[in-house]
Amino acid sequence: MGRVARLPIPRGLRRRIWALVAKRLQIDPASVPGDLRDYPHFLSLFTRALPAGSRPIPSGNYWLSPADGKLVTLDRVCAEGSWVIKGTPYSTRELVPGGHLDGLLGYQALQIYLSPRDYHRYHAPCQMEVLAAIVEPGDLQPVDPSLVRRSMRVLTTNRRILLHCRSADGTPFSMLFVGALNVGGMRFVFDETLGQAPWMRTLRHFDPAPRLEIGDELGHFELGSTVLLFAPPQMRPLVAAGDATKARTPLLSTIRSAETANLEESQ
Figure 1 (cartoon, rainbow, N blue to C red):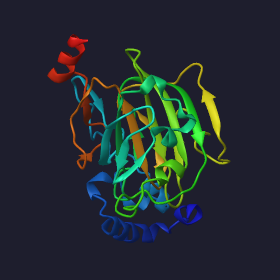
Figure 2 (figure 1 turned 45 degrees about the vertical axis):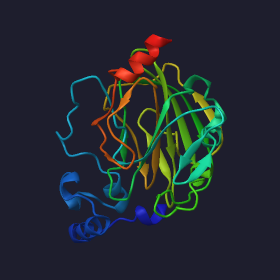
Figure 3 (figure 1 turned 45 degrees about the horizontal axis):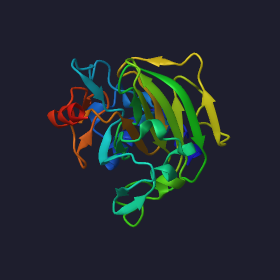
């Protein structure tokens, strides 16, 4: 599939072929910048950038969505896990490479599924540094919730990359990227070799830590998949499970809810 996705299409045929592909996959034409003839192969269309000037960074006390897609689930991280995704319970430690969650217990876990029609680049949810990356080799099974109704355990066996990060105010958080059917590649702008073959279980520490501004591009999926954002517990979600998400648009408010503030004061 990787080779097929990179097969060059003659320039004279591209506009017609890509228009048919976009219609088939329900890709919004407004999300495809430039001339369709400028995309030499399917992968270049699939990993397209945002149109110039679109989705300016909003002002306010927000963390932004790292990706377009659908918020499949929003839950809390606990040591042994009581997660239930599409009716399937599993341990968070099964899902997270390395199983090191001590610093993230109680955090919110937001799972965003990207369908083929979605924009497939991912972005920094806040001003941040990337401290380390853990690579976990695995399968490339489908992660579409409509195709895996009986089990979401593919999220624990597919290829995964976990980024341990720190926001500008020193708050730790993590992001998990899960590969899926077909190509399953993941690319990152701060490390060109991360997510590329050969797939081996590895731990990388970054010194100095790469820095990104809020909304900066982090990288992109080469067909697939799913992003999980492990966000601080005090933040207030601005979307609910089942809602659509858009990269570079508000996902969480950093202003504490009244319920959270009262709980902290009582402690």
